Image (tube, one colour):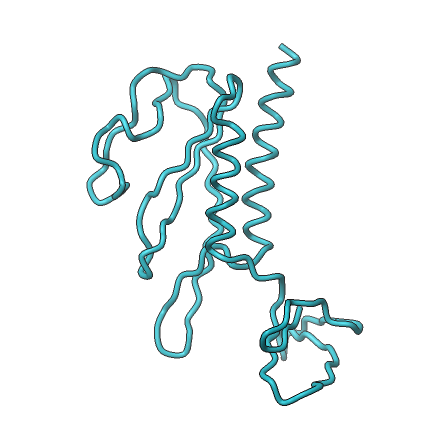
Length: 175
């Protein structure tokens, strides 16, 4: 992907190749002709903004809000160094769910004021899967945390949420 200043992101027009060698490591090769003196930016994948992530979370919340089959909860676990919300998402069925809420944990869930703000607890221990779509990188002078800014990790997360929900819905139909 590339973008000249003030223009939208586009796919590189030519062939992109890569190789991995013990001596040089990962090498990416492509040809690009610079058309003007404006800055040009390159990315390995289409950038996905923090705002895009928030809109996706809101869309999932809206989609599953009144579902009787899929339990979806999105809560802010912590704030990043930049003050952005770092979400903890629960996708499950309503099977074995109780009316009790999870405990408040000191230092976590800064937007919660009471235990009732936390997701519901389960009667039995259920398997858990952690998918982290945060990308930690070091910029020139300070560490930075970007919210799944590569479309790849976010798409993985969004795909897992959709996949989990679809399995729950199919499982219900089979019962």
